[in-house]
Amino acid sequence: MTDTLNTISEELIASIRTIPDHPKEGILFRDITTLLSDPRAFRRAVDALVQPWAGSKIAQVAGIEARGFILGGAVAHQLSAGFLPVRKKGKLPFETIEQDYDLEYGTDTIEIHKDAIKPGEKVILVDDLIATGGTAEAAVKLLRSVGADIVAACFIVDLPELQGRAKLEALDIPVRTLVEFPGH
Image (spheres, rainbow, N blue to C red):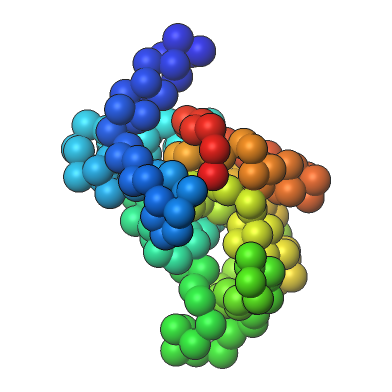
């Protein structure tokens, strides 16, 4: 299995574009749109994210706006689960609950519909990348506030130097990532 995951990791790394100095100088932006446009890489990434939970009776896959919607929808389809969008404040049309989180300069807010989860439902959280973990940590707190049983948080890319994975693991959330990149 490790050899298979290593082969998949190499393929996925090759399909991810790196854009220097975006959105600001010194940042190496890991752009997964190139992975998404490659049918084989996209399929392999989704299959690798799904594999540990196939047959686990996952009720919902929560995808963080925006790339988490693309991946989360595909993962939910593969698991025969529902899809729950975790959106930025003001984007959902029904009654919501929200969670604030810190950004480098200020705060932001994410929200879900108040009735999106039934207490005890098994949920997987999905996004494209984990960096500092602030948004994912806020999503975990938000989902738990309505009684979700968060089985795991899944990401294609991990930037381990930014310690986001550790934030989630400190909340007792298993984290699955497919590739790692150094730097920010």
